[in-house]
Image 1 (tube, helix red, strand yellow):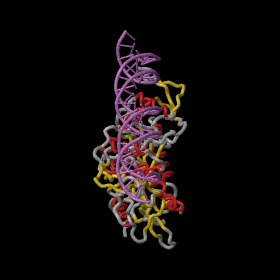
Image 2 (tube, protein in one colour; image 1 turned 90 degrees about the vertical axis):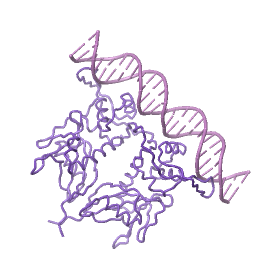
Image 3 (cartoon, rainbow over the protein chains, first blue to last red; image 1 turned 90 degrees about the horizontal axis):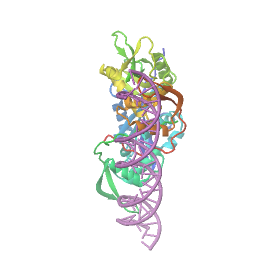
Image 4 (cartoon, rainbow over the protein chains, first blue to last red; image 1 turned 180 degrees about the horizontal axis):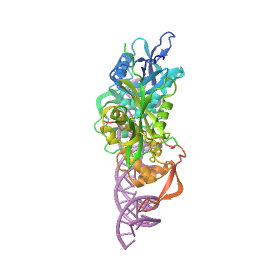
Length: 209
Length: 209
DNA sequence: TCAATAGTGTCTGTTAGACATTATGGA
DNA sequence: TCCATAATGTCTAACAGACACTATTGA
């Protein structure tokens, strides 16, 4: 009876680099191809903690958000996790940010893991503070809107975005402003959720139909 | 070096029985305690297909909806799947429906798996046709509303529910009606999604805050 | 002064929820 | 006749999106 290959964790760690969504990749073994960071599944202990430590070592910073995506069988079992780190995260030696389009284009296992991971990130956008974890501690509302537009892949209405965001009491203004080349300086905000929305979401039917 | 215990799949198969949400449990080994259905992870092949076959054999019917929940480490790796079968599903010998409250109260591994599975079901309610898969092919709108109310654990507004549902073009009326004791008979509908919603969902911020 | 970006005020169409009312069966 | 449930019409408050406008900086 052949011994079963050991299962491992794979990490799809996201950041926004140069205005586009990128995933962290490290140098592969023999063929120097970039691959997703991996580690063996620990024989005992929490999977989430193991994934968090994988993210911390491979991105050089503890992830602000991390969540299990799922498992696929690729010879061995692969447990995929999606993570988010802020824009300004410098990868350690041997690791680098690869734009998602390019990372998926390499095909292979990475593509099979990245796509569902990004779908999860998109779908968690309104439940978890993942967009805020892709930004530094303070950010302008335009920064935040850009994150949403990148992840949702559609333009959002500025006034409406701000109105809804402020009504949700998720951010609070700091007294810092940032001047970015031309144009009026932007006020910086920090993520500071105050309270849960009183009203639950209305029932929606967004089935694929 | 100790050999790693073999990973297995566990199934949280949901149905609505006697007006409440129930999960399928089978008779355990030595202590005749009910446990979730399980099977070994196949050495090769698709995990989803394996889970689907587990659901079909243990519920006696192919699940109308099934989706991977996640993996937990409990000595061995456990890959959990959530599934839905219609209300009228009769479990085969050795299996039975257990109300979720009772199933969770037994504690142990089952409780750790059921809770996230139900959370997934709830969160997929507006993306996948899972509510329809908990009902027979034809159903009244009150049936459907009851499913939503059970899963969301809150009362819904009848007129609003119908208006939104019909506007989504997800169901079509049949020419059958069902008389249920007193009261006006209800028209029966079938799930027949016509087209995708034209407008994408507005951006919402439903963070825990 | 112009260009560019941040931020705000107002209007309008849509819709969710409240409420009331009609419809249609069984007891 | 009464009761219970289905189904529908109308009103209103909330809100998303459109548009126009003001504000504030650098070039």
